[in-house]
Image (spheres, rainbow, N blue to C red):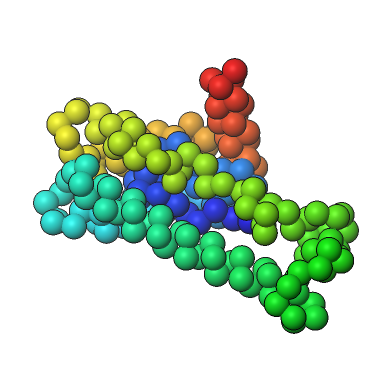
Length: 193
């Protein structure tokens, strides 16, 4: 699966502090993204998670939203897999032969095993779906009052946007997203050792 759904977790409801939904060729939108669009997405997702509309998201609201988004992502993933299976099952017998699985597809290239990441389950949601929802919440709750405000959510998301916007023009290009994603991956790998 080459695309992650924007907002794969409630961390993404705040425009993903790590900005992972926007970065890299495998993540997020393909075209340019403006700072204003990121801010609007933060506000939209924040409003969805703030179920009691008090202007702050509690850990409980965060968890409910994260679980709802996880379920939505899983449903879309299952739908995508079913569509891919239907495309690969050329004889429409409900089974994939080795030949069908390995057959070149015009939209994928000529190599064998091009579908492995799609059907084989090797593509993961990564840290964004993160079972560590508490960790994301704690990072967003900068004043440690047990609530995340729109200002807290926006500040972190926009700081990551600004870091990735290397030419400071208020727009992230696909090239800037890719460079930021690669830098982030390198940081993650270095931390893992």
